[in-house]
Amino acid sequence: MVNTTALNPHEMALKNFDKAANALDLDINLRDRLKYPERELIVHFPVKMSDGSVKVFTGFRVQHNTARGPAKGGIRFHPDTNLDEVRALATWMTWKCAVVGIPYGGGKGGVCCNPKTMTLHELEGLTRRFTSEISIIIGPEKDIPAPDVYTNPQTMAWIMDTYSMTKGYCVPSVVTGKPLEIGGSLGRNEATARGTVYTVEEACRKLGINVEKSTTVVQGFGNAGAIAAGFMNDLGSKVIAVSDSRGAIINQNGLDIPKVVEFKAKTGSVVGFPGSDEITNDQVLELECDILIPAALENVITPENANKIKAKIIGEAANGPTTPEADEILHSNGIFMIPDILANAGGVTVSYFEWVQNVQHLFWKEIDVNEKLKSIMVKSFNDVVKISEEKNVNMRLAANMLAIQRVANAVKLRGIYP
Ligand code: NAD
Image 1 (cartoon, rainbow, N blue to C red):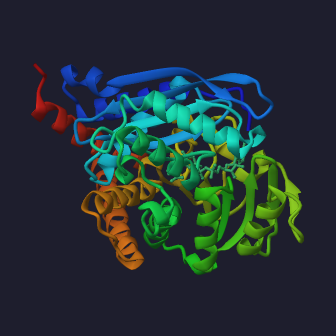
Image 2 (tube, rainbow, N blue to C red):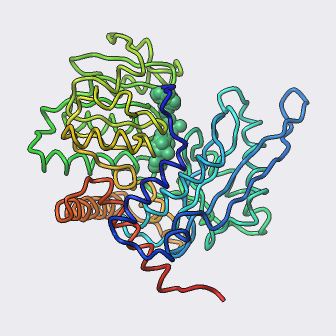
Image 3 (cartoon, helix red, strand yellow):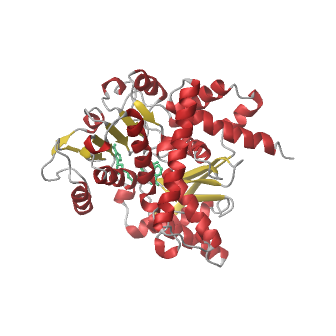
């Protein structure tokens, strides 16, 4: 997945902002306020490692914009994470919450580490100390973290516990994506994938593609990717190829996704799944298929491979998988794009439901969660399609225009303090 045209993700976010701001003819006095994060915290903190040594890690929490509500966004544990990546992800969270109309701003966090080489004990120590470092800016009314790449409900439980210990009482609403036992929401674990698949179904309907006769390819086989592959499989789509950080597999007759999930849980990778052939991580994106779901990291669809992409629909479960230049190529090749801030907004939407349940001390049934999610995803998809058709712009620009206008209205109404 290494490519020579990889853009700094924050530059990518700014380029897409400028395009939308120009298309909206946005007030010049609002532009910089909307472009740059309100607050950025960098922390360097020690963790006691299992061999007795002490290692210092670097972490970030960025709050991009809080005009529409508290900052909301995941925490990523990855060796390559850096301030610009976190800035970009925080920016996309602002637009994402606005595009689906939930009352949050955008935030994101990350710790530069390799969780694959760390023990559970070390990960717990890292999570707890990082939480304590960023506790000066997070809180149920201020900034509410959630899972992202290589963090999960257990990580959220440690964050919730650490924050609660310092407060002296239980504060479940400080994070979402928690285990059910401590205030998580039914349907949250599957929400990102479920939301992506709702938008893919809408796109299929629009393009006249029969989902039951379709083929799907998924890049990335974690929370977003593996569950999206499972849902596509349940809808009758043939999932012909999937990949993870160690490689990619294909079976033109369709992979048995629940079995691939079991295989990965046992072996740590999809590679070697019986009855599949191995292909490269680059090839997986270029396969003949109806639906391509990138669900790994940023910058994977670039001008180098955009012309080789044969999918009819791309549903971006990942954040920032397509560079702005690649976007233009895909659009001119007639590929229907469901952009990240729309396609993967199901996760933050059900995070919002989890937070609402926590602050009200209520629990909703899973069917209610999923129905409310579907209605938001379908409406948001159609809102974006409407702008795309009325203004004759591509789906990403339309989604950004909708979101940025909503945030701009909020910033303008609130004015400047003091
Ligand atoms: P995860 O850690 O559960 O899974 C990430 C997957 O990507 C793993 O299977 C990993 O092996 C794979 N991967 C890593 N490098 C790869 C590579 N070079 N090629 C192919 N696969 C690779 O993370 P996740 O939560 O599923 O997040 C994936 C993407 O979805 C990220 O862009 C994230 O920001 C986005 N996202 C996640 C959520 C959520 O609720 N989890 C919500 C919105 C967006």
